[in-house]
Image 1 (cartoon, rainbow, N blue to C red):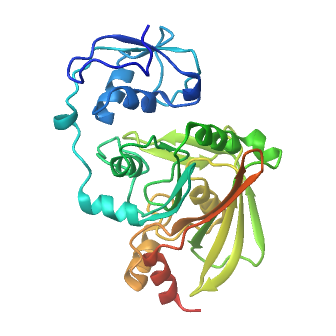
Image 2: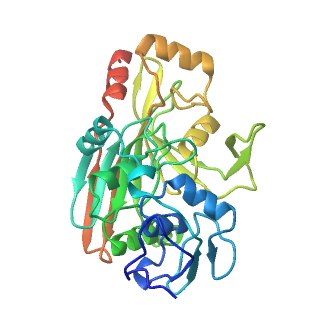
Image 3: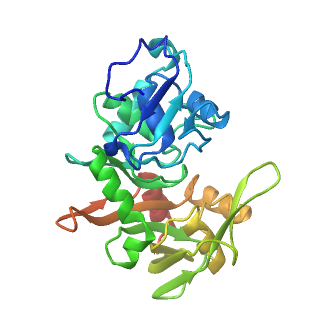
Length: 328
């Protein structure tokens, strides 16, 4: 059995390996574990190896998103990897853009004000997401995504710089911790179509992920779905629409977008759950060419509550400009 910390064969002559997952890698996703072992391998190759069953965990098939446990055995098949030729670097302008978007960093965590249009990670035709680009910027650091944001959503994206920070952050995100009051408080800023009533509106509606023709993922309110809870607070009305803060207590796919639609006030610029005619009017009048949804703040504490964090990401400039054009 191979120790993941021991010297590895040359990158272009890697044979079958059975690796024992170190205890400090417990909780890491299988795909990220493989990326760390197969230096220079594109993410697309990693997913292909997993889907085809060539990668095994404890002798059985596993999904790329599976969380590994310390002591488990991972079989990695023979792979030819050329670090120089198979893995190009992200474009320098893109790297500079993301480096400038870092809004917080300490020894444990890094916070990025992710621009809209940038995927959290690569895959499905996307060569470089935020995490791949940050790794290219920090080749000597071990960086892991704590969570994900939709590609169209801008705002705070948290990256762990230490395994212990990743494990603790993931624990905070579990619903059991939220019930105990130890979780992460997540607030978003959004523009909802139409006039919301004053105060706070709570949406407690389960969400179910389904597939449309062609394999497109679509989320809807459905009793068979997972419990989902959102609180919409009206901040001000602008031009007949509603600028709101949203606090979510669960982190479901497209949660705010679907809950807003459920209220009858879709997120402005939402081409999946909104109305095309309204979005066209907002685009023509305000220059709004994207989803008006921004992850504005995160509050949590590490070290069993001894190290509090309050992180903020300024509203994306294009959203602030569109809001300004609405007037009062």
